[in-house]
Length: 145
Image (cartoon, rainbow, N blue to C red; front, top):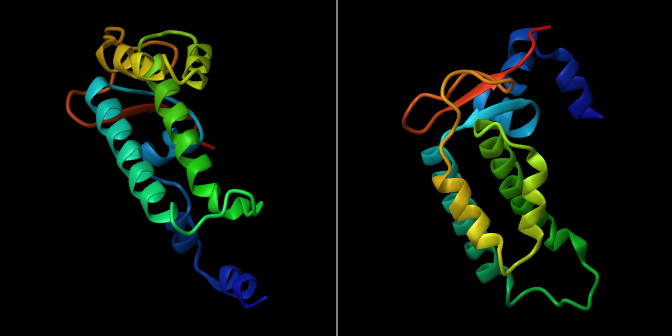
């Protein structure tokens, strides 16, 4: 109950600051957007590293027959972010996000990630937003309310 009271007592600008205001976070969680190759590569490396570190730290503590799903929640989040990064990369190449379904096949998933890392984006704007700038960046298409 105290959390609700604190939330209601916060000034509006503080509440807005806590909401997802950053374009990268908005695009990663919510809207359409585009990421360039280097952003995709760095994102996939970060997800892979976090997944490796988590599985190494949890490998001795998790009993897979226990039904303790809370331990698997971080892995599900990493899977979500991997798929989301692939979808944003496919948007940059003006391709259907349905191609990300290929990630569920472990033998070809690394090949899919490699192709997405090397696939050039469309030049100029497309229906998913303007072309991302070079370097680690993201471009998004959001409607202001």
